[in-house]
Length: 125
Image (tube, rainbow, N blue to C red; front, side):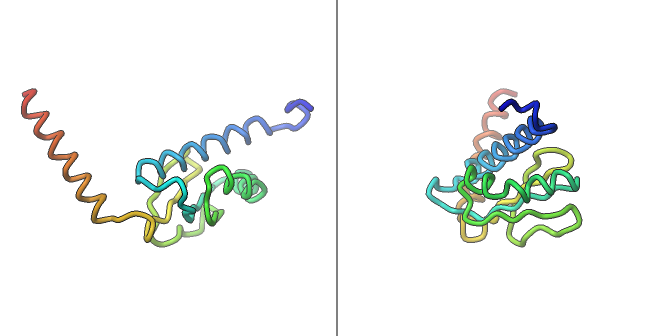
């Protein structure tokens, strides 16, 4: 079967792919362990995109290795304790970080990196 037999399927696959990439990138940047099963949420402001995410929720959950995947409409609020990322102007993804990462450790790591960059900037000036 060719994708041409299913109008819009190529765009849907591209949207799913970009969403998975964004989730994976977020999880990697937060230092989430590969064996963790995080709670993830995706919000779509477009009704057709929301419907696609609902239909493909199990695929998205599997590809992101999520323990739970929540699909939100544009007017719904994101779950508490989440950090957001953006796929496009109509798609926002959320990773629930409470209990998933050590916030104090991450803040210490960021402060250390910021000091390194400030020192480097001063050396170059």
